[in-house]
Each structure stands twice: as C-alpha cells, then as structure tokens.
Image (cartoon, rainbow, N blue to C red; front, side, top):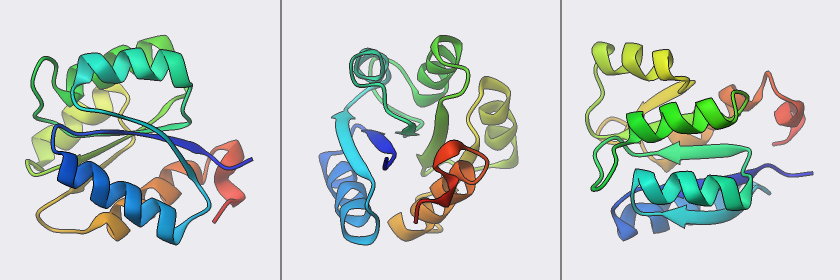
Length: 130
C-alpha cells in the first residue's frame, strides 16, 4: 500500500508544485491539502495520512505548533518540514517536536523534498516503496 501524503502550506502555488512532483515521480497518494496548521490537524484526523509535509510560517497556526500537536495525536506520524526559514536552530526545534526532516525551499526543490521523505520512510513499513 502506497503512503498517503498531506501537504500543508499557505501558498497554493507551493502546494500544487509539491503535489505535481509527488504525482509525477512516485506512486504515493496525496490525500489532502491544508493552508494552515489548524486545518492540518483536522485533516490529519480526518484523512490519516502517513506523511505530513509542513511549512513553517502560516496563518492561524505555524508548522512547529501543528507538528507538535500531530505528533501528540499520532507519535509515529512522519512529519517533514519544507520551509524558507531553515537554520540549525529550526532543525533542533523541529526535531524536538517530532518533525523528522527539515528541507529548505530556498536551497532545494520538490525533488529534494521527495528524497527527504524517502529517508523518513526508510525506517517505516512503507520504506520499500519507491
């Protein structure tokens, strides 16, 4: 069974780019999209995705707070942050709340994001899926 992905970003353009990249290069299923952290938590509960891609800066609730709440609800959820604001401090904060990988939007592409998701999946049941 292919992993299900929830894309969380306040930019529709970024969400579309991530979705397109996933759909073109993997057999993974994008099960939903959210535009802020609060919406992400509700969609996580409704859709039960295996992976959640989180932006950091979003209205209503940021990605760190959403990641913390999702990790509380489902400690085994795979959380990956895709953000413009990448730093060592952010990576430490992200790991502390349960986010496994942090990928810089400014230094990478959706393909790098997919590679990071593969790394995060490698230790899970879905690890053999390409």
